[in-house]
Amino acid sequence: MIGQNRCALGAAALASLAAPAIAGVVEFNFARVGNSYSAFLGSDDPLVGKEIVAARIYLTIESFDGSDAANFWTDITLPIQPLDGNTNSLYLAGSDLGWSGSGTFTYFLETTDLNGHFVSARWGAETPGFDFRGRIVDGSRIEIEYVPAPATLAPLAAGLLALRRRRTA
Image (tube, rainbow, N blue to C red; front, side):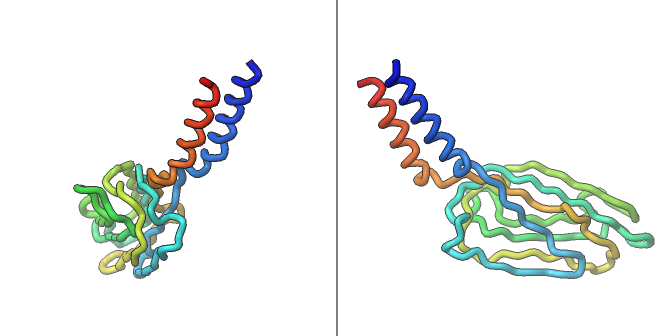
């Protein structure tokens, strides 16, 4: 009985240590209206190799009086090697989203279309202000949920297997 409790405690300890490494979320921001930016994800960045399992896109804009939200657009290319059929870029246009006129407009999407793996690469975003006067509201972002690459889970699996063998012996 005591041996089984130790095994259970050992498994729980391993799981609790691994829990923070099992899932995470990283945020990417849209470029401000009238701006663009580029960045580089280096090969030594801890994100490289992580598997992307979901993305959530939050975009809220304010189209100023006299401006037309249909003229808004933004794009972003992410440091992702997408799975077959997926993409590493996103283009959002007010006209495609059915926005028009002035006011506040909101878009939300949860998707697996960005699933793949983070890679070392240049990435960036652009939000030109051609024929649009307004701003992207604070809090707009792309949240990418990721897990470690399958190979990084090997030590956890080996530890759990060793505990199981010890319990059955």
